[in-house]
Length: 309
Image 1 (cartoon, rainbow, N blue to C red):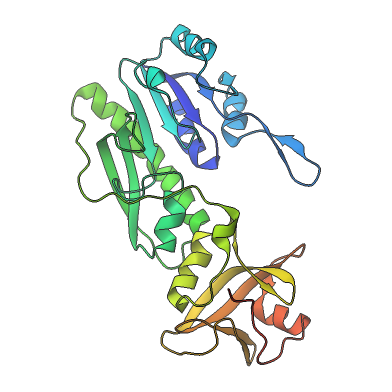
Image 2: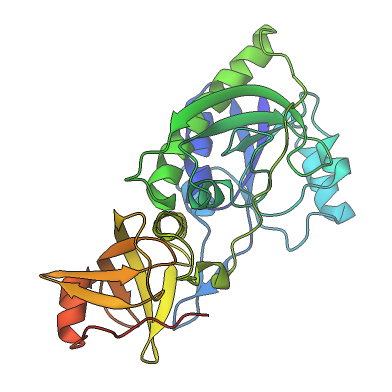
């Protein structure tokens, strides 16, 4: 089967690898243009491009996928199927209707829950204990297409968006190959989505800002869901502090939200309901350090508080 692959970030690479190692033929990989990153603003290649080039897979990086020129390029490749994994742009109808076997999307949620750009992050922020990956026959809606296959997985409290995303990317790769085999054999049939949909919009920098009036478990989940980007953060005496890891040590205590206490070698913060132990932080321009080392280095005293809005 001739396949065109659309994908951009690290999450998409395991699926491209699985396709490349299978009996299918990946005729090209379509990915986002190179972007300037870091203080030096050097151009950085998307992970999908790096992998594709290392395996001799041709790469396309169109500035727009809605031009007739790009569509004609895809037509000339005569794809049997298009596979889309975290590409980052809405696929237009004319491309959706191009391949004989349709466009298959690997989505990191149990659809129709968490349709949208950031299902992994929002599932954790919302305190979900289960998620999964879904292969879907794409239509013109936002992750509204018929479901092909689903695989579930638990979300343990130790997970953050990075660890869960890594695990789901591997599961999604295996599920995509299983889906293709099922389509070829006729054992996998599209099934309409059922249930109440929820949405997972693209993550913005300010989504990581901590509202200390939330409960300790809610902030605990925010920290996990926003790791590694944009990071859950708060300001302390004019300094931006990213909270990397926390632990809920009290679910019911009430007090001034954001207030810091020092308990032995631990740094605790009161929330709207409950108390968090701050295990790891990252001050601006500094390396990750323990909450205790941060408190000692900044000479924090009882009664100081993170800014609360």
